[in-house]
Length: 241
Image (tube, rainbow, N blue to C red; front, top):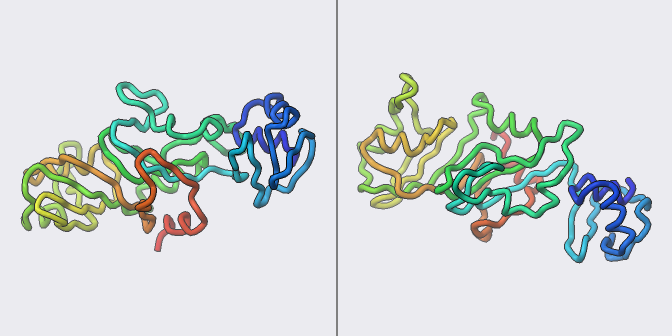
C-alpha cells in the first residue's frame, strides 16, 4: 500500500494532507525517513512514525480505555467532557468505509462510573458484544451507602423486579467484598441496571467501577484516562469460554 494511503486509512487526514506529511519529512518507516508519498510497503506488521510518535497499522481499531469519572460516552456530551477527547486525533478521524464505523464505545458507562470500556470501529464487533444472546459477563465493583448483608446478596442472586420489566433481573454472581462493597456480575445491559438493582434491595450505589468484561480484566497499570490497543490475547478473552 502506498504510504500516503496508509496514513489516510489510519486517520491522519485527507489523502492530500497525508501526501504532504510524507513529502515534508514528517514520516518514518522502520526508523528511516521516507519522503516519497507513493512508496509502497506491506501493511502486515507495519509500524510507522509521524513526528516521532509510533503508530502500528491497524485494519480495524480495538481499544480498551480506563474511563475516568466525570466523562460521558457520547460524541456530543451534554454536561461533561466526552471520552473521545481522551483519544488522539487519528483515532477520531479514521475514514468510515468497508464496513467500518467511526470509533465508538461498545456500550456505555454513566458519567460517574469508572473502569473498563471497549472502543472499536468494527460494527460487527459492536453488534456481537452488545447482543443479549451472547450474555457477555461484566463485573462491577460497587461501593454502597449502607452496609451490605447476606439477605441483600441473596435477593440480587435470586432476582429483583425493576420498574420497566415485570420479569426478575438476576445477578450472574454477587459477593460482598467489604462492609459497604459488592462485586456484581451481570450478563444483561439494562439502563442504570446496577444502580437500580442495588436500590431494589434497599441500598444505594455510591461508587461504581467496571473491572472486567468477559475474561478481560482492566490492567492495574492502565491509569484513568489512558488507553491501549487490544492484543490478540485480549480479543480471545472476550470470546465465550
